Length: 224
Image (cartoon, rainbow, N blue to C red; front, side, top):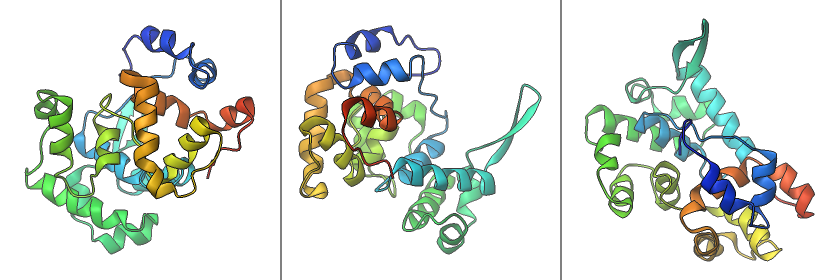
């Protein structure tokens, strides 16, 4: 889905779902506006790994502010995602210390070097593949596993890691999984079973609406 895509089919599906009906009411009109740069998408995916949305946003804001490109829109200058050429010139230590991204620094710098040497696929090449083929190709890149590939490969899947397994486990079953890591596969399968081709958009809407969903469904969802 993109900024110009018709959301009506997703909304028609979501309004009959006990969870999604609240999210689409709260966030009506929200579109996914993913970057046209594979490195930007991969950076986002890596910074979303194994942590809350709040913490991910902190890391993203720092990476963009410190290393991003400057673009001009409607007469205003704004910072956008950094290029792989820029990040490839950093050491993992520099990135880790500056933006407190932890283990993700090593992955981002390694990925940037791979893409700078033109050893990764392009978005055009990925679009010419099946969903499964594109995901396999993405998972060959440094730092990109099942979760991150599903983030990038929209609307290809349902991105579940340890943190999101907690959130969706509570939404699906009414209680937090006993072992979040072991619950990833089960929660992912349940999301795809419930939401099918709309799984990616469901994930996108739910994680942006956790505070409202907590209140409306009377479930203490993990926000941080």
